[in-house]
Amino acid sequence: MRKFLALIVILVLAAVAPVQARQRVCDPFTTTPDAGMLPIGQVVEFAHWEGASAPVTRTGKIVKYYIQACWPGVPVIGLDPQAYVVDYGSADGSQVVLNRSAVTVR
Image (cartoon, rainbow, N blue to C red):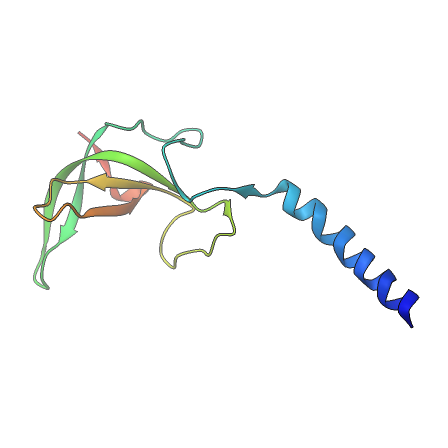
């Protein structure tokens, strides 16, 4: 029985090790972009909903990137695997994470 359990443990470790080695372990909020992403500091415009009536067009700068490929990562519903963190000069210092399609280069 011990040999059987040891064999199962070895098989599980062998199966998991290559998968972990291929994953990108990092903070999903990074300053390193994936290919084709806009640079940090790029001024962009986006529609920002304030209240329930209508969106307001805001201007901000890209300050970071959200890269979901970082492991372990849990996909955020509605957020692309590659998105931008934009600082739009809010009085409270808040920032917004936007899909690539939600920003327009200014």
